Image (cartoon, rainbow, N blue to C red; front, top):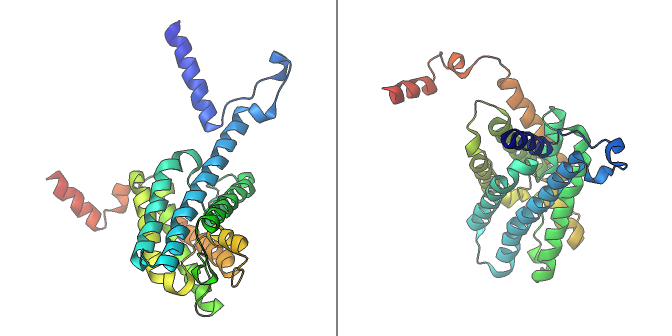
Length: 279
């Protein structure tokens, strides 16, 4: 009897974690509070995770920008590494709870291609913007941020140049995210490293020109706190267009029901590598 009840309890806990448990019938206990239902608790946990994750992504990433602008001690390569590392760390810390989006463009792209419930999109975006604004406010209070030390994103050249770069690097970011997080053939344990390294590379390439936002929340938070809205539309439109295009491209090239063995029978390096390991 003890083992049976333990099994039932374990199943109930699993269902609650996945948001699949059935809410308590009000007829059974005389009352029903929607705020304490398993579904409400689950989405609340996800939103809190998105706020915390986005907060620390912006705090560390934008913080490195601000410290470098003020003191010059981080250097540009250090800023690039900081962005890649903090995203990687937050993915491994919170990916199992909320999916570790931390980016409205990623959330929108996932929803469009049915990898994420559309009704949760506004909630996630609000949580991400909240985390970004809180982190930006913290940096503004903790550091002496002058207009020259602004830690947001402003086009260095024309808006058109920054828009093109934001579309391209956001395409690459979402292409990698889609490949490592939604394809069963990918090595999921390396998702955080792949995404973090992609951001690091993107910041290296586009940072001096557009600031390499790739994330509307990353740009909106500092802009709201420091009242610097120049070119902000670029960092809203560009990442969303690039993320949708990247997700579309990844879904297009992987659209097959064939197993990996069938796909590698055309003499690719994956097949030859497998033979070498087998021998």
